[in-house]
Image 1 (cartoon, helix red, strand yellow):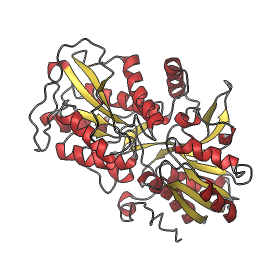
Image 2: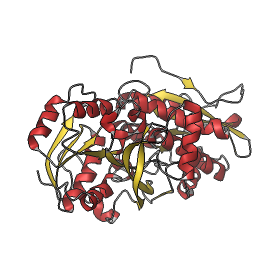
Image 3: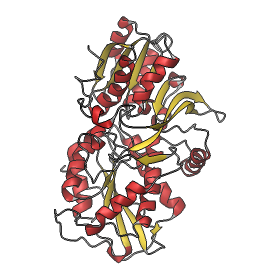
Image 4: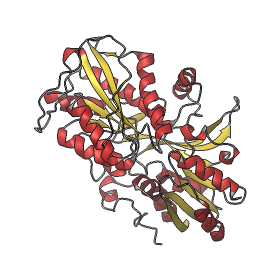
Length: 432
C-alpha cells in the first residue's frame, strides 16, 4: 500500500496527445467518474505481476495485449481508441482495491477487467459496485460474485466460478473411475480452494463417493512433506489436488519425489496443471487428469488458431489466463461496438445490457453465453496431461461436457439456499 504506484500503459497504439478527462465522482446509479471524451476509452486491467501469482498474472496481461495487437485498438468505426492501463495487485485484496481506486478515480477507467485471486475479486467487486463501474472478472472465479453476492455491475465475461468445472468432474470420476471410491483432497487454504474442492466433494459424495480426509495448505507453502506423509498413511484410492501459482509446480514435484505418483493417482482442479505452470513441470505432471473450462489441446479451430497466434507471439502454449483475457477483450469490444461507444455515466446500463446480450458461438474457450446471474454457461473439458507431437506437455481433451451452469444441474433458487463452499461446508452430502 505504501509503495509507489505501478502505472503501465501498454496498449496505446495511436499517438494521442490527450488522456481521458475524469468527470466528478458521483454515487448516483448509472454514474461514475470515467470518460469516453477525446476519442479514448480507458480500460483498467488488474493482475498480480509480482508475488505467487506472477506467472499467471503475466499471461493475463499478455492475453489482453494480444487481442489488440491482432485486431487493433479502434472501436465504433474507428471513432474511439481503447487505451489500457495495467496495475499490479500483488495478489493482495487491499492492494487490489487501492489499484482499482486509482484506475477509476485518477485514470477515469470506464471499466475494470480482472483480478486473478478469488479473495481479491470479492474486495474489488465491493468497491466497483459502490462507484457503479462495470467489473469483468474473467479470471477471479469467486463463486459468490455471481451467486449470493451478485450485483448488477459484475459480469463474468469469459470467466467461470471456482466450482463450475468441479461439479461435473465429481460425477465424471464416479462414472469413469469407479475404483476411486476413497479420495483425499488437498487444496489451498483460501476462498478459491474451498470453492473448487467443495464443488468436487459435493457431487462426488452425493453420488456415493467417500472423502477420507481434507487437507488445506497455506499459500506459498515451501514444504509439503507433512501433508504428503498424511496422504501416504491414509492409503486413498486417489488424491484431488487444487493449487495455483508457484505452489502448483512445487506440489507436483514433491508429490512425485515422495514416491506417491506411482502409487496413488492424482486428479485435480484446472489451475493445478494450467499451462502457465505446466511449462515449469517435468514428468511428474504426465497423466494427471483435471477438469477446466479451457484446454490448450482442444481439437477445435478457434482454440488451435489462438494457440498458433500465442505461439508466434510468445513462443509457448497459452494458459487459461491468457485465453480468458483474450476472449474477454473479444467479448467487451463486441459489446462496446453494440453500444456505439456510449458506455459511461447514464449509459452504463446500456453497456451492461450489451455485454449480457453478447454471445460467443465459439472462442478459444468454446461457446459461451451469460446466465441471468452474470456467469457464463460454457463447456467443461476433462483434460489429461500428455506430450504432444511437438514434444511439449499440454492439457489434451479426453471428454467434453457442454453447457455447464454455475449451479450444476440444480435449480438456482434451490442451490442458493445452501451455504457457500467454505472450510466447514463442502457439500450437503459430506459429513467429516
